[in-house]
Amino acid sequence: MKNIIVATIFIVLSFTPYGFWVMYWDYEYGSILVYITCYVISLVIGLLARSGLYHKGFLVFPVISYVVSYIFLQMFSDDGWNYFFKPFGAGMYLILFYLMSVLFMSSGYFLGWMIKQVSSTRS
Image (tube, rainbow, N blue to C red):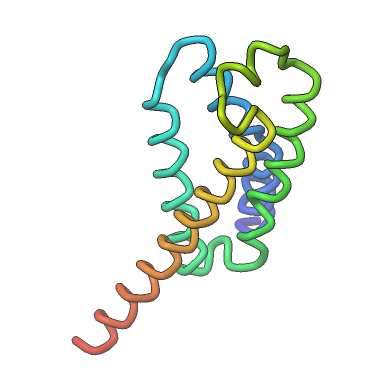
């Protein structure tokens, strides 16, 4: 039962268009807080992956979310988005966001590994 719940949460979180959501909030409201929130979530996902909760396929998470975000970006953005997210444009900015997200996930995974190493040497 626990595996079904974890798999369901993983699927729901994977198909959430975080990149589009972040870019929308930045475009509409000028809020940087959403970027920080998503990077913290990426760090936590990396920590959870190291603990074994999302160990299988945690790097698939940003790829699926990127594809869904790209589809949303093509459907709902207008020319103002490319002007707002200059010099890269909205598409390249979305790629940059997900590369940073993978970097934070990897950092969380490495941080989880270091915590496990330190706790095993103390025992």
